[in-house]
Length: 108
Image (cartoon, rainbow, N blue to C red; front, side, top):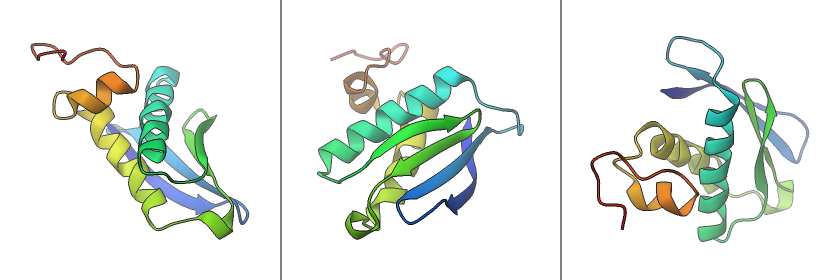
């Protein structure tokens, strides 16, 4: 299970989220890419500016001009965490962002 352990501003147009596994281990690159894919999908669906990207072994960066930053931006990453951590609860979002269908669930 992925969790955000730290959030810091890295300049006026960048926020960095430090993401770790429950046991404080570094997440896999695939897990971070999955998180970015879901968060990016949510940004697009909500018509929000900016983009997420993997910024390091345990970091995801949100790049958005400070003038376009909305209070929903941070919430987008946390919603993406929920989808990545429990794809069965979020099957549509999981499928639309390129993930595998939840095991035992209906893929449609």
